[in-house]
Image 1 (cartoon, one colour):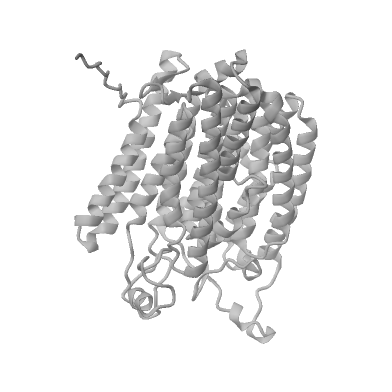
Image 2 (image 1 turned 45 degrees about the vertical axis):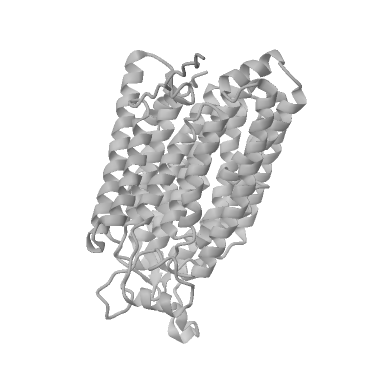
Length: 535
């Protein structure tokens, strides 16, 4: 009996090189953890992570140049499962640029000594993840000066999944990418050196809620498959355009898939995990999540709604209007009440998710290019803001309580000015990249008839300016309490001299904020040239 011959799948390794490089570095990192001497692991892991990320970024640049010379929209790889087009390469380049300062923060070892008489420098991660918080074994591991380097391969695996997420050209590949970057992040969120119980609680919340969101996504993908008979975005779009099946199934599938993606971007009402996870996770991981996850998730949303579901716009657009309005207002209002710097930045991130949704709602080339520009400038600025949080420290570690930042701007002008500049950018003050990001997103939305949404966005920006300016006033115009004030516990606050890694991470975000605030046109042109999806 003759057996049917199965064709071997075609794998375009060159087109997939950025992702393959990152995954290969993750595998090499695991091997290094298994076989390299403990004393050499840090240098090996740092070299692998930074070198691999830089190589992947160079690969993206080469692919983009080849695509520009060919005057093509893009190509499909792995039998159509991956779309290597201009938005993909722009988003992958942005993710890799965000990953570089994030990895520098992960590798920072000059935050301070574990004990005053110790030569061992601490990092942001638990000395031994398997120890029970508050136990003797944890205390012994901490006192021994143990530092773990498995965070590097975990971060690289997460980065690989993030690179694949916006490049996915079908729902199954997108789900696989979702799980690939989510699972390492679940682990990384529970590895904080300080307040380990809070960190483990954050990891558990993220895991449980993330599992629910993944289930919604998978159920929605099943419904869309039942409607269209395919999981590929272009084919789904064709089926919707001709009305191939029961429209109610398509709408319900769209809603469920949207829930899974809205959870990842932290949109209301799927935002409840954001403040707790951002606060509890190690700050370098918080920085990475706040920037990279949002970039990848919005990239995936843009591809889904622009390629697969544009003809269902009348059904999903009112829902996204409601979500965008709620996200902007809830994030801005709740941020005003926060007393912790990381939680304030978390609610700020929620507000910015609402701003980004206005670009998606525009659903045209202007909206796509505006969203790409916004994601680039916001991502790098966010990493820098959380990097500054790691700099303000006392004997117990990071000082996140906002009240304890009083006078920082005068005692450490560089830290104060850098944070003030980033906060002004988040507020959308002119001559910052944040202002240009909001301007182009709101302009795109208004051009598509979403003027009421823009008005709500401006109102939310005005509310957000309250808590941004409050922090700036506290840093520059409030006095740090003295011992005589009865608040001696706050006297020990210090701003340590950041290590080279942290300085580079901060400087990159500040430079982007200034440069693209004054000269945004080159990046706007690049985003505009990238605003065409392969269909």
